[in-house]
Image 1 (cartoon, rainbow, N blue to C red):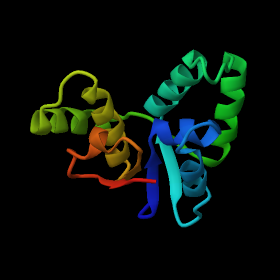
Image 2: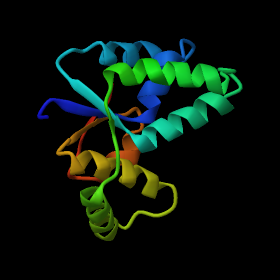
Image 3: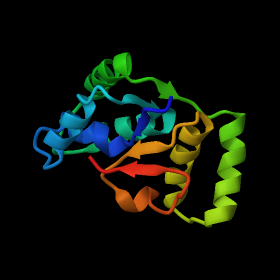
Image 4: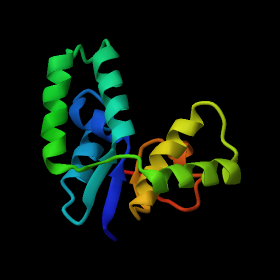
Length: 138
């Protein structure tokens, strides 16, 4: 999995939001065949939350699930496991994040538990503290 890259939620959202200024960059990244993309169950939950609450997108739950199904045909979903739980506590103690940052650490440790060390995100500040990861800014 040396060329595996975890896709953060924002990359997935921007890929379907044609009005976003990051749409083209997201699309270009997703078409890059030199990477094997994955995402986490946490990102999937966030994806559905954003899609179904965003007034600008006006997407129903059924539509959101259809979009999700299209994504997950090509993008495997990683789930928390015992190793990610241990890493979660380890990195929380190491970096001492608080509040919403803890969500980002959960995403990061799921990737790290599967030996994935790269994450693609437009939110550099969410992951730049985590030295175990390499951040790809699309």
